[in-house]
Length: 271
Image (cartoon, rainbow, N blue to C red; front, side, top):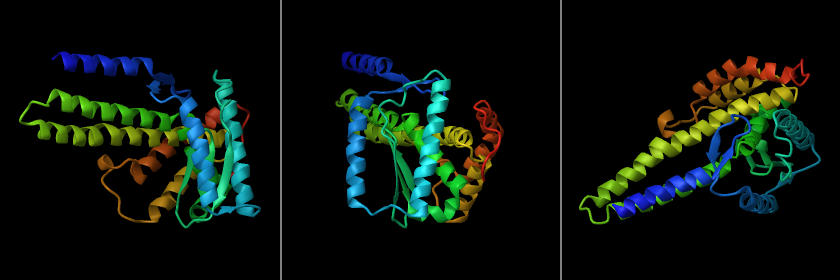
């Protein structure tokens, strides 16, 4: 009992102390791993990735990636400054690169390090479609989703240790440990990831609107993604919301994104 109580106190203490504020929602989020550790690692991994892959430069597509990236970064700065978070991006080192790959993907590492794969461009189609993708990926970085996931992973690992200690002398120890692993993954970690995706969709929509792009294009982008086909696990077993859920959410948020953009003097939106 003393061990269980000590573990509970330890977990509670870690959660209370290691929290940060999401600048878009105002909610407290896990921050067991500080950005002072995360960003240097991210920058190093990004540089290594670029050295090991074919970066496209000087083409119309590569220039478009940089141009749209700069607009999304500027929109992020404007939004954060206007909402009391001036200096939030001080440690960011924005970089936007197009990488030659058939993979339909894009990502943004903590600190503003962005990669767009050439394989996604036929689906984004144009600047506005690319802005929808980049807004979403940048939103993950701005909301510190990487930091939250790393922190949650640490808590999950500590929880597994706690279950192991608490049930060490039980004949049902193996059952308890298996149940914990399945329950924490399906019940906590996967929904945790889905909530991040939904939050990034919402934030990204606002960012692309402030950058001057039509937010409704984001729903059209996901409709094209959905049309690509391919099997997908049930939504409750997926780290991403279903395409149908995602499209419905985005369509509902479009008026809000445009209203937010108008606060910054943006009244026309490029398709």
